[in-house]
Length: 92
Image (cartoon, rainbow, N blue to C red):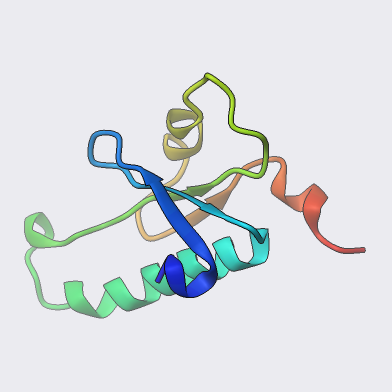
């Protein structure tokens, strides 16, 4: 789904996946699609057997700082959380 939306995986630290996209819109669409495709697969499974993802989206330059925890912590499972930078990127 990442590649289908023009993204590419560039890292897998721990149990995370780091991907980059050329478009914030495509990144959000990929994230929503991932959550929508995963939801029915968890139906009927015991809670400890379900796969629940937190997806954070950051729209800024990559620096030598781990952004993941700041985006992941406030995000509950099955949600997509854009960073503070994303609203500023919306077209007027």
